[in-house]
Length: 150
Image 1 (cartoon, rainbow, N blue to C red):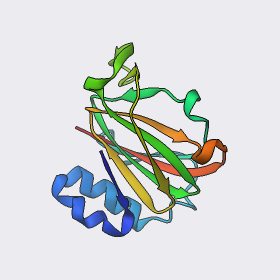
Image 2: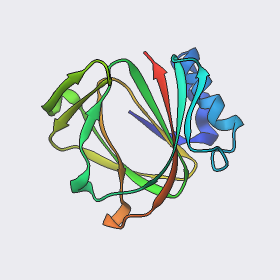
Image 3: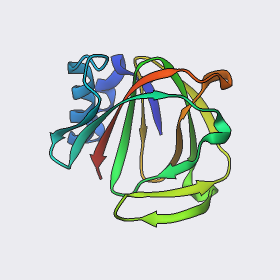
Image 4: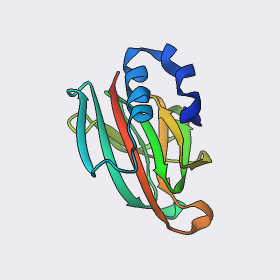
């Protein structure tokens, strides 16, 4: 799991061409003005999901993880907390669904505050709970999740 600001995105280009492409997309677009929806960047290899969400309390969140895609989650406006735990420390709640590319888990982990202008990168071993409310107070968030094929 990585947490940083978009100002430092170039540091992570060494993680591979696809990660670099995802981070460049975030830097080159005003994500506050993109329409909500799914947008191909490189077909199904890299695509963006632009979302307007309301954060939820931590107890409403569920640990998830993916195998086919790395999540690059960018908060364009607002602030949210995101949970992180290595999936080896979690208990499977719903086995991996290959079609939907996710498994659900139970357990505990750490939470970080992700303000506007910041991104996280969650790899397949990274269980995560996105969209949690800071201080338990639901709020509006504009977020872009870029799915990057492993």
